[in-house]
Image (tube, rainbow over all chains, first blue to last red; front, side, top):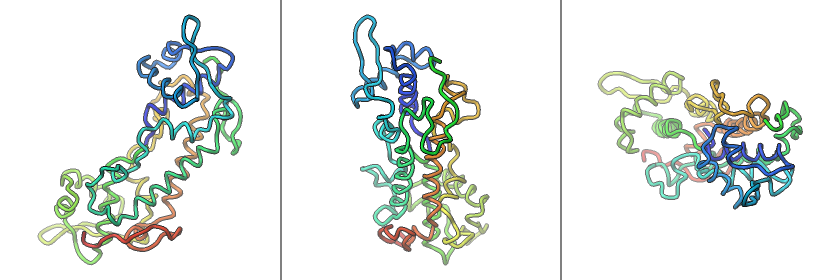
Length: 148
Length: 148
């Protein structure tokens, strides 16, 4: 039961940018800070830009920044947008024919309900909750180290 | 965001056994019905037996059956027992040192809360809800085809 690294790193990119709201950040900077490949990050940044979470400025001195206020970026939305496969089990795939229980299986409905609960919890939080402001439950712990 | 095949198939084994409550079932039978490898199923059956979900009878005419009534097998419990890695993101691993945000990251708390919601939903259902009886929400749909 894991999110993909793509989603994991997308969240980290957004958190990093959220902590650097006053300046443009390069892919290289994030790659170096996080020890990630620039190539992998470029795909993530492209997706985040396409979905309107970040904006990029080309050319010398260019870079990227959040395209919306951190309060306006829902974690549930980010996970829905970046997680390529929300199929919890094999039988969720459109072309799944492998399970003999499929035509009448009730497990699928239960897993869909569980996934909905998972995402509904993430919907309670915004990016701003991860960078130093407590979320609705008020127990999110420490602040992100700005510039770290 | 996927459960492992191990968990997926463990649930299928339990559902199959739940539909055959009056007789012993062999690994071969399930392997053939589901098109799964006997070798993989043996590991799953071993885990389910160790955790007290099923009991096995050795020898000629032997096989396995549920060790508890299907009403007493919580889906949340099965998933917790069979899902080897409940780490939603890389930073959950005990040896994770790769993320520079780690010391003060609030994302982990949010993901833990979301995972809790996911499992709490599964805790609402028992195996019996998957084999022809409606669950608490009453909308679980069709019956499993017994003997299929």
